[in-house]
Length: 368
Image 1 (cartoon, rainbow, N blue to C red):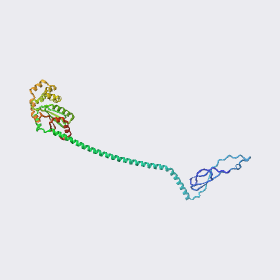
Image 2: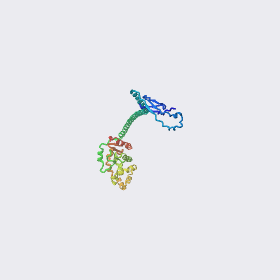
Image 3: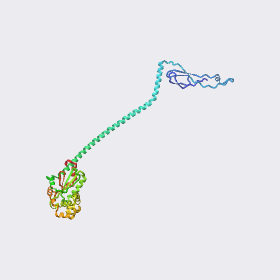
């Protein structure tokens, strides 16, 4: 029987280079792009012995089978004109570009999708952020306005409170102020005997000066000692206190002053500060019982000498010499002290409110 040589299933057109497919049993195939015809050549036919189906007895044995020869492609000259051939080549080029584009399209689609999605997300996020900034700015503005209103209200409140405090202090000062006696300072300078005991407590450069004209005639002195000690602690470096002892009047009311003068004569003027400390501690017993000998014992003085001086009224004339000053200050009736140039004399209200008085002088320096 006749047999065809095996044919290739696909090959490239020799004319245009396009890939074409063929039927393996066909003897020719035509390029679908350029129309070129390709013809395949068959192998040689079988021998006579194979046709008869047997070999002659005397014939030589059949030769070994040969390997099939590869198909021979016979290129039929292309009869297409150059214009048609260019069109075919353009079609092939377009088909190639389409194939490449088809391979690239998914990547382009994915990239475009991501780009669009990213852009949307970016602008959406940016819009949200800008909106948050606007809201925050509005909230901050409202908070600032509220804070300004609060500060304004607080300032108004503090101003009103400061005015009330100033008015209260002014009223306290006016209610307890009396004018200084005319020529008081010159009178004191002329009347105080040489070596008359005085005491200064506090910093010499303190802006507020209190001068206490101590009469030593009642238990109020003890309260004054304690009040001034507290003042020096509280208003450190702002207040200094000058104590000038003045006998209230002639007679027995000068005995306390006479006792003090005798003690100072025995112990020296340096003990004047200690003497006031003792008066602050024991003043009630001394003033109420008129037990001046106890003061001598406290200060460790010569009791016999002290009692002799008190009996003979050794210091009476010295104490009585300031009676005119005491009378002008009315020391037998009032406890008098001055703050700067103001004379305060109501002992109950001033001693009990001495902190308030001094707070005002510290706070309102123009009042000094």
